[in-house]
Length: 335
Image 1 (tube, rainbow, N blue to C red):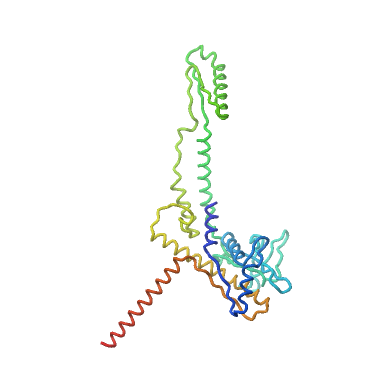
Image 2 (cartoon, rainbow, N blue to C red; image 1 turned 120 degrees about the vertical axis):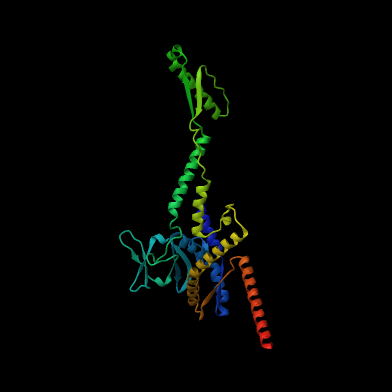
């Protein structure tokens, strides 16, 4: 559904960018060059592109899987794989993961698991390898698609009207020639309707009692605004995206919009916590491949300016409260 695609794209883009920082400054330039130029699959470039695709896969399938491509001891690229073609199983202990590529007859164990990039979202004891954020949405989406399908059929009926032409004989003489007159009326009506489709208007003239009605004109068109909105509200609440970010002009107050943005910010921070180990694994693998004796850190960009403003206000209020407390303590000591 378009609105679900829009929600996923918004979450991926609002998660924001990041910057790699080498703990040893002499490797900073090389690390930044790697972040911006590393090949990703067939068409992507940069570590940011890899993380965006990886996050999209996590949201859609509940897990994302990829590989660090190494040749002659150097990192030459990154690859995002289709999670549906791979399986994750427990190894010798609960923390030992083994990756298998799904085959026709049997699954194939993947060698070099240290090069595999794997992360999941919403894991639980029953599903330790992640659960898609779309869980629970298919039922609602099915009902919503039925409503949209019925709306399309109603508009198709309104735009392509069907008529019922009824001829009622008035006397016995009319009844004797009813079949011939009905045939004439049908031919004249068909000729008039076909001429209308080609842009030519023809009048329909009939003698006798002829009744013309639109088929289905008396049917009441159901009001779908309320049920459609209720379904969309539940679907959007699952993804924690404010409606106004999707172009939905629902009534909202400034306070409500602020709270919705705070909820979305907490969701984005959750995704960032999941992605940070992935980024660090890739960056540290690259640093080791060039012989660096340090590791990297991740610095995420601010989600938006409003967050920075609110944080600055909070620091100001805390500093003012601290200053008042110190002043009160001094006054008590003097007194």
